[in-house]
Length: 580
Figure 1 (spheres, one colour):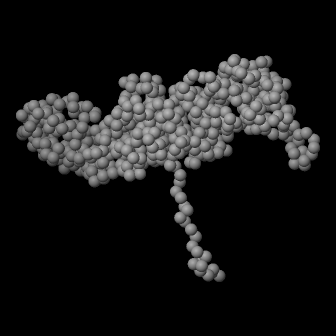
Figure 2 (figure 1 turned 180 degrees about the vertical axis):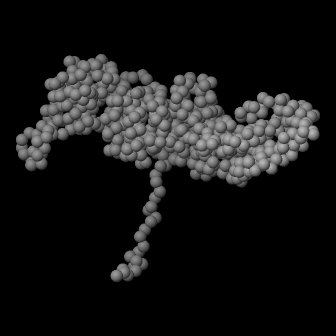
Figure 3 (figure 1 turned 90 degrees about the horizontal axis):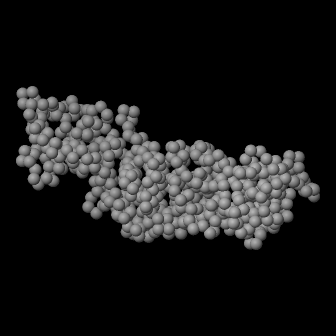
C-alpha cells in the first residue's frame, strides 16, 4: 500500500479535456497556484518531461507530459503582457496504470474521461511505477536520479538491468563512457562478475577496482597490468582464414594441409615412444619436407596421431607455416615409384606465392607475432580469463585493446575468439549460478563483421550468437557504442533495456526507435536535447521510459579529447606589416 495518496489536493494541476488514443490533453487550471516544493519534494507544475497521474475512478493512470502550450489565438496575450489570464494546455502520453496498493501495470487499464483531475506525480508514485520501491528486497543498482526531480533516485533491479542484454548508446561527449564506467564500478561494489573489453584504453582509471589485462605495451596501463596474447592455435579455422585470407580455389587447400602436417610434426616430436618409421619423416626446423619421402610412413603417422591433428585447437609451429605451404606444393606420386612423394611443383608454387608472401610479412611484424605467438612473460588471455572467473574476490576484468594493431583484422578476430570462448563456457553451464556480464566498448567494431572478398569471406559472429542465445545460459552483454546505426538490427532487438544518451544523427536515432517499444517512441524525440550525463532508460524490461542523470563514476574514464592549450597565436610584434 502506498503511504501517500496519489490524488492529494495539494498536487492537482488541472483536468482532462480531450482523450485521443494513448494521449490525453490537459488544461492547467491550477498549476500556477502550486508551490515549487511539497514537504521538501520538488513539485511539478507543468514542465515537459514531468510525470503526472490522472484520477480515473480511483485508479491512477500514469503518464508523461510531452507538450505544453497556449491555444491558438491566445499566444498574442503573452507577448502584449495583457493582464487577462492566458490558458495553458498540455499533452500527456499515457504510459501505465498505478493501483493504490502500489502495484503497477504496463499499459492502460482505464482510459481517462473528460473532466478527470490531473495531479503532479509524487516521488513514491514514480518509484512504484518504475519498479524501485524503497522497501524492495531485490538487489538493485543505482543508476542516478530523475532528471525532472533529482530528489528521486533511480535504482534498477539487477534482473531488469542485466537479465537480458543491455545497450548504452550516445554520441561522442554525451556521457556514454561515464555510464559504462559507473556500471563497472557498481558491479565491483555488488560483487558481481563483469568482463570489460576496452577498445581505447579509457577505462584504465578503474584502478584496483578491476584486474587489468592488456595486449601489447603496458606502459600506460595501471600497475599490475598483465601483458597478454592469444596463441594462434586458439583460432578456429575460420578465424585463421580471416587472418591469412587464402583464396578458396588453390591456397585454402594447401593452407589446410600445411596446418595438418605441422601438427603431425608437433605430435611426432612429443611422442617418446614413436614408431621408428615415423622418425624417418623428414622434420627440418619444425616443418615436414615431403618431397621424396615415404608416403606409407606419412600416412601411417597421420593415422596414429589423427586425434591431435584433427583437433581444432592443437598447437603447431606457426613460424614454419610459410615454408610448410611450399612443401605441400609437390608433384603427384611418381608412377615409377608410387610409394614416394614427388618433387616440387612450380605451378602450385605460383598459385600460393601471394599467400606465402602474406605469411612472411606477418612473421616480420612483431606487433602481430607478439600477440599470436606470445614470447616468454606474456600470458595466454584465455587462461587469465579462466583464472579470474575462478577467483571469488575479483569482480571486474578489464581487457585493454588500446595497443592492439588494426592490421589483418587482428582486433576483430581477437574479440571474436574471446566471444567464442565465453559462449563455449556458457554452453557448459559455467555461468548459471554466477552470471557474467560482458561489456563491449565501441561495440559497432565487433558485431556483424565480414572479412575477405566475394570469393572467400569469413563472418565473425561470436557476439551476435551471444546476443541470440547467451541469456539463457547466464551470459549477457552490455553493448556500448556511439554509432547504434552500425549495429545489426537483430542485436538491438535482443536488448532488454537501453540507456540512450544524446543522439543527434538521424540514422542512429532511427535504429534506436526501431528497437524501442511502441510507448517509447515519443521519448526518443527528447534525445537531441539531452545534456552530457543525462540519458533516457527504455525497453521491454523497464515499465516506462524515464530521463535520468547518471551518477558520476568514482573514477571517470580517461575519455577527454586532445588539449589545444599549447596552441598560441604569434606575438603581435612578429605579425609584420599588413599588406595592401
